[in-house]
Length: 161
Image (tube, rainbow, N blue to C red; front, side, top):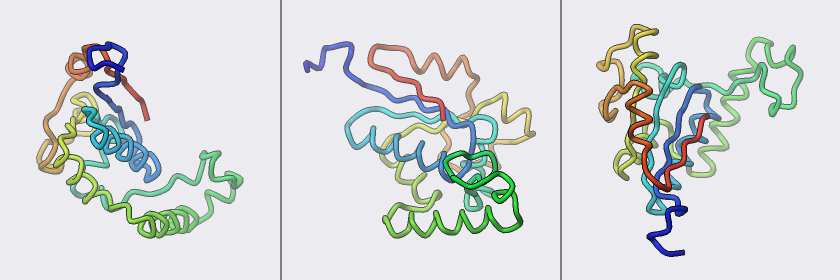
């Protein structure tokens, strides 16, 4: 396929709305995979996705056990005390065995590769967050309109996680 072909994937714009461990890793792996293929990538952290870039919260992300059909356990059992911690520990062990970096290291890898990290202004305002509470590698705080402006051009795809 020619590089002048407008159908060629050139940029991945990923919106992360939930900072569950499984969503954050899915987002980061997609963004990193894009960079490894020479494709630009940007992540827009909105609503609860902001926890993945908050200094005080990013190391304490969990697996969602309630309301997660992929867990293949009844909601009642998923809500029992300790189930979320157990599922999180099990997933973190699997992630470590696969040599996938922890969240904070993965963020460093992403920014070093050129991935842009953006915080959602509306969500920041809703949760009374300041930029000082976010990791230093965040490129800025954008409105939704600003984020969409960055998505212009042929070959740009937007994914919502």
